[in-house]
Image (cartoon, rainbow, N blue to C red):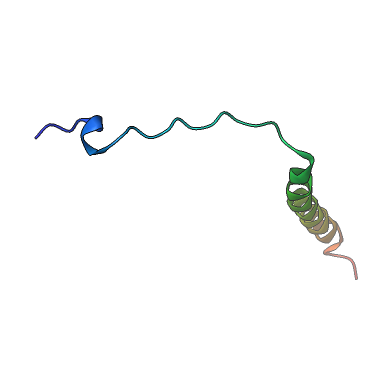
Length: 53
């Protein structure tokens, strides 16, 4: 049996075009970036002061 796309129904609709980034997505990008930056700063601070007594 040959597999032809049209035998099982209509072809799937094409994917929509990408939309421009809206302002509501900014917190979702900034919060993880800020947490990662805080983690890097904390690790660097720890590494520089690990031998202090």
